Image (cartoon, rainbow over all chains, first blue to last red; front, side, top):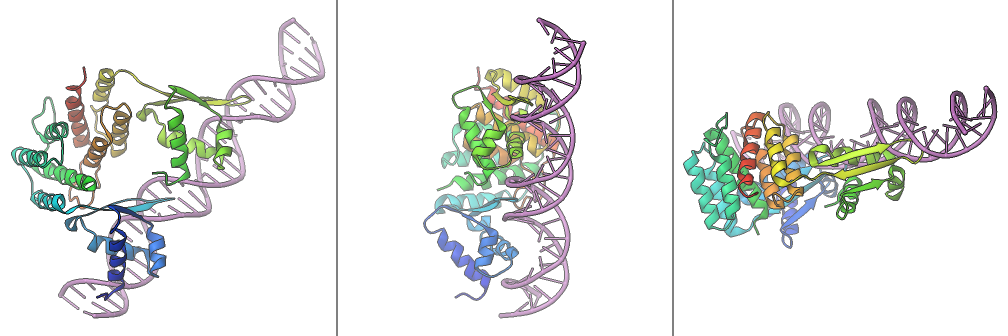
Length: 153
Length: 153
DNA sequence: CTTTTTGACTTTCTTTGACTTTCAATGAAA
DNA sequence: TTTCATTGAAAGTCAAAGAAAGTCAAAAAG
């Protein structure tokens, strides 16, 4: 049931994602195609293709800019979605380490990556003049999850 | 992905550097070849082949002028040592990105890791309520380098 | 009241071109 | 033969124009 133009655009984008794990959109072309203002595309993207629904958006402005939309796959998408929620509050080193360990066991990251990330989110690393606090830590973890989501297939 | 003419030119130059440690370009010829204005070559050089990414540009004007582009490489531990020093002050997103790009080109990190780390140190990531400031950023980068150093002899 | 639509304004990146600087080669003058 | 000014062929600079995408809030619709 397509009530609004936003719904129609959502449908269109959704079906473009049927065949591919990601697509590249031109905001202006899309807007022209649907006879709407460009910012309507942002609206659709922001309200329908959210990270919580398993989508990741990347874009570039300027000449030959683009919007790249990636869909996460289900198993991992769920896990990542939950992890993302888990990262919505400040996290201790311990919590973050456990989450990373979890990711490792689910083979979302390999050993080297696990070490790298643990090292990053560890507060008390050698000689570091400034600690990473729990808020920043969950911030970083969220970022990691979002990035990993792009690769999940 | 080659979206703009700048990207195409970057690609072209990059692959010319695959076999050689340096190349000599003719700005005008290149521009003619890609049907663009000569200063576009400068643009590509200035935005993509920066010192931070490990390139050195020398040139000569006038009759029989040229542009010589050299890719630096010192050994990995040296590079990491210098990078560590480079990370002693607060870093902008741009600086950190360039350093990561450099690490990638030196094969110290792979593409996936590069993206992961870029994503972590990027301030403006989607929905992030809190920015990572330049001090934290250099802190993180230092940590990354320290971790990588463990794998390098 | 909530969701959608619209548009003015902003930011970012790329492309273009007019103008400037530098250098090697040339050739005339000493 | 040496010197030096001229000239044309590069490359450099910088700012304006162009081409996207992003933001935000007001207006409209439901």
